[in-house]
Length: 63
Image (cartoon, rainbow, N blue to C red; front, side, top):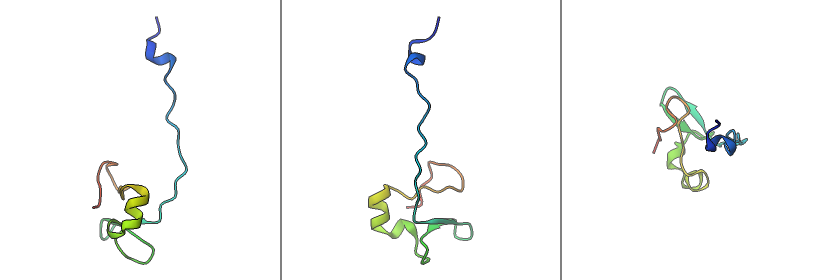
């Protein structure tokens, strides 16, 4: 017998997203190309919701 949920389960869709910041291992924070902290840029936070770190846990936020 097949569980009911498997009839409707679908693989997670991978979205192509480019972020305007990069992880700086020295600061251990996400920074913008001009060197400012991504967590201090309100436009980035408004557009993306957060500046999730890619260094480790996906639930860690820099702000």
